[in-house]
Image (cartoon, rainbow, N blue to C red; front, side, top):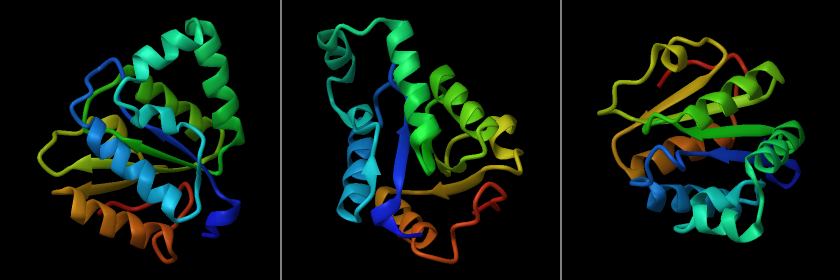
Length: 153
């Protein structure tokens, strides 16, 4: 994968729970340091809900913006450890659009069969942040990138 030409749509739970926000920030930083353009870096912000309220966007405007970004991106990376309707819609929409999708999930989480059993998603299971970054680095730097027909870790 050539990072200079890659636009990433990162998604993680916003309204469903923010306990992994520090991890989201680490993932976004990890991607940015490697030259990826993270279209949705705001998802990693500690105060993402307040930011969206300050911008004045209503739900319809946020939806339209996010669909534009999904159309524009080359790759979707979704942290799916915290159940989220929004992340589920983003993943399903990205798959419908034919995007490459990597789903990240902690090993101690019971993942929905709609994600775990979907042959069009690359699911990476991880135990801690260090392991995640190593697995994600491998996935993004060569043999790991399999487009929409991923395998399970």
